[in-house]
Length: 413
Length: 65
Image (cartoon, rainbow over all chains, first blue to last red; front, side):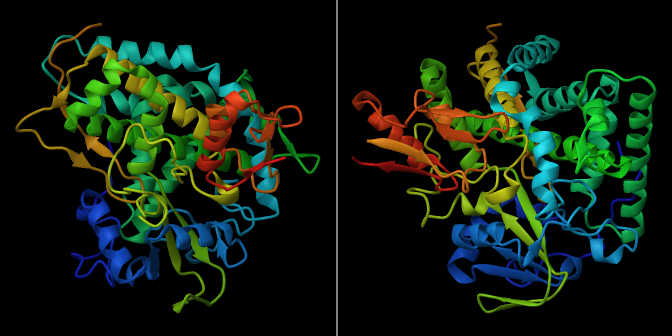
């Protein structure tokens, strides 16, 4: 998928408190245990890696930073070997390279407002029949084999296909999207020059698609952005391209991970699987509980100026990871935080973030997750982890299974 | 009993609208507001409490009259 030589510039982690690395494969594999241990020892971990990075793990601290746009900028949201401050050509705050996710106030709100209507609950609900059909086609393609990979044969195709349709990009480019997403979100610990190469390929691809939409306008989100205005002026091509990068990158790995983790839970917890099959009315609380317990997305911020955060001497341009999944497991905020209770009624989870950067695509993600779980369960009500096969988890800020071999047993559809 | 949405806190998580569409609606941007004057009929009181308890931004409150 990728041509990059994927060799980390860092060695093995020596301590999760003082030398953590979110790109070390053992981080996502053991995330809940690591966060739980850190919560009891130091609620803000630190590493010299990536030029200096902080990791608060309690709900209170994650909440505080998410709300504090005075000291923390969204200019960089993927902690990697390249910092925005290292790049002389990077688009500065308050706009950033992929508005509005990389934007700060006051620009942020104006850029976000352009996209919000396309992702409002009522607009997104109209996609349900198409998403359901897509899920059924993927399931039909699995034929009658015993073991399928629920991550690569099912979960990942759903957001890839939906965002390609929304943007009006060639559906056959799905494999390319997955490559870009991998390069941006998982290949984060390579030497900086290699990372720059990956971004050039992504920029070139988007520029080509945007030009095609200028030459052949149609009714999709790309042309919507080309026609949109901010402060009475058309969006710059840089802004259009940046917003497309956001929509393409932010919607794929994240939703794929949420679907995969939910199916992983059901594959490993037959009692919950049976309860959901027998009582579909539990689906709304189950989906919110999967989002809480297996929230896929950790965001990031950049420290604007030297700042003492609860005794932690943060330096200008340090990274700060915002692990919403860790906040969702904080026993001070949630009763029985480490138990997955599919009938949990009080669930103030932060899977889609907190504050002004609430996930723009949350309504779409939730719809894709619900329909995917409904359709997979309807087709394979007795699926379980395939014996003797290995589940492989992602690396980096988006946590979810990248390979999820399940035995589907009896098929009903 | 009435429900209120603090517009300065709502970020459009859409939890209240999903839990209690009888009491909440969302605008074109996805931000929530209480339907009508926010009055909660007794049979919807539990849904109102759940909407409050599930808002990630603590934007919803109940006013007892």
